Amino acid sequence: MIDSTGYRLPQKALNQAYLSYLLIFSVGLLITPLLGLGTVAFKTATLLAVLVASLYFYTKQYKWVYLSSEGIQGLSPRGGKVVIGWDDPITLKPVTAFNGIKGLAIQSVKNRGTLFIPTSIAITVEFQSNLNHVAPQSHPLREGSNYVL
Image 1 (spheres, rainbow, N blue to C red):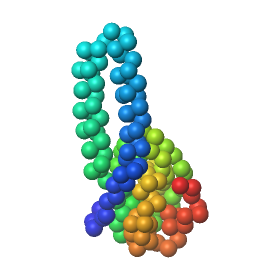
Image 2 (image 1 turned 90 degrees about the vertical axis):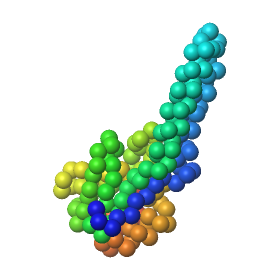
Image 3 (image 1 turned 60 degrees about the vertical axis):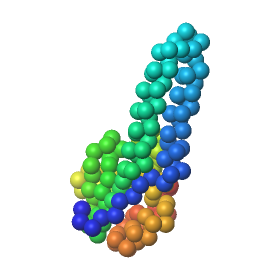
Image 4 (image 1 turned 120 degrees about the vertical axis):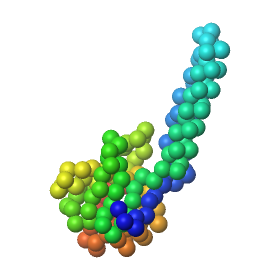
C-alpha cells in the first residue's frame, strides 16, 4: 500500500499480553526444583527467558495494521496478510486472537478476507484521527456505535 501509516500495540497492551507468560514461567520455576529438576529447570528457564524476551521485542516493533487512502491492511486472526479496500462491504465482530489480544475481526464480504485490529490500537486518538482522514464518511469503522471494542 502506497503512503500507508502503520500502528504498533501500545506499551500497556503489549505488557498485558506477555504477563500471562510471566505467570506460567514463574509457576514452572517454583515447581521444577520440587521434582528434583533444579539444573534442568535453570537451563530451560534461561532458554525460555531468551525466547520470550526476543518475541516481546519483536512484537514491540511489529506494526499490526496499516491505513492508507486505498484501504486497510493487516493480519487475519490466523496470521495471513489481508488487504481490504474502503469500498469493500464489511462486517465487524469482536474477537480474541494472538495470545488473548482483544480486537475486531473485519471481514470483507467481497473477497472473504478477515483482518484483525487490536482494540488497543483501534481506540487510540492517532488511529481514529487517521481513519477519519482516509476512510469514507459512511465506513462502518468510523461509526463507532456499530461495533463493541
